[in-house]
Length: 445
Image (cartoon, rainbow, N blue to C red; front, side):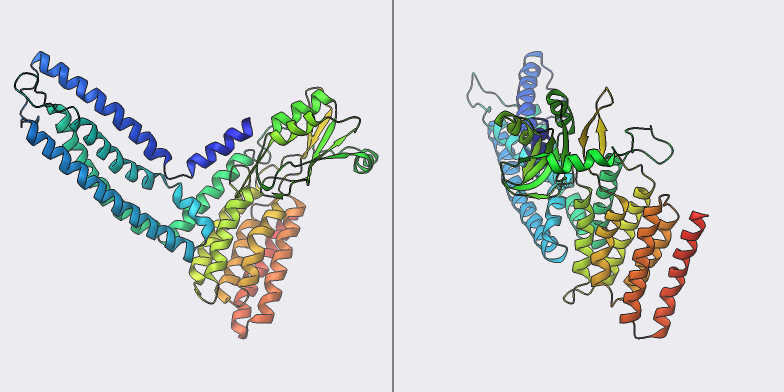
């Protein structure tokens, strides 16, 4: 149930209708409250203020009808502009970036403002009564409708400015980069030397691991899709209740095939269908990857922008360099984070769950490999990749991380010597390459 709630919440956050729906509900509540305030003000004689609408039923209906009609027109314009932005983003930056634009709160608020103002005016118009004895003109409500129209005009001007800014490549890259850092902060909260000790990183003895590989039984998936969330707490409770050890065979971001293994269980014994159902309930599958527990997803968004920018049809190395800079920011932070142990124990210290987690070398490979391969012929991109490695070198602490940085520096250098025709270009790359080696040597001493 927990992972399904996470899945539905992620779907709500990336939908156009969530915030507008909340604002429409607020418009209904506001209209009811405003009408009740008008009834109260009429009975108490509080409507003598100069700024309150003082026209008759026909005038009130005309004002509200004009506002409602203009709101529908403007809402159509906003929808059209949004679709144009989505089309440009999909063609220039990649279709996976549509999710980032769709979850943009300012765009949802702007859409919600116009729709809510339209609905408010319609509901208030319905309460206007004509006649000599039971005539009712909601003067305060009409005044509030005019105020909402003025606010909507300000929102329209803001939206035009927001669209002009948000479609710029550097702004898109910055937004995705901030999202990547947010995911990193959530999944790797502890800093090396500052966080609690946590789970023991000591693996079980080799004999147990060999026996696990030989005897463990697989629990298979009941559906197809990308693994979005895993309920680690439910898996731990299940392992404790069944007195077993489980090892995850996939992690968030993997594509799971029906009948493929989700995890392996040891000791085997007699496993029921109920156990398989409980295991599947702890894994949330979907049609696309999300950034909830998948740090590679936001990282690959930056990689996709850079690779598209380096394609012959676009040929925009400056956007690729901006992506490399944002990747460098995230990798510098990741290098300082404590990697969680894959071995999870219960309250009594017994090993219950083996859950491999992402490592810094794997993230470095995911971030740099494709950009290095597609940008091999670009002098500026290759140099910036090497300069970014120089920055990351100052943050690494683990021997495996240093080895990964040196490996990438060597690959970038070899690709440059094969692709760069000018001796000066090769020399420009040699300077940061030597800085990488010196930094790594200093960090090991």
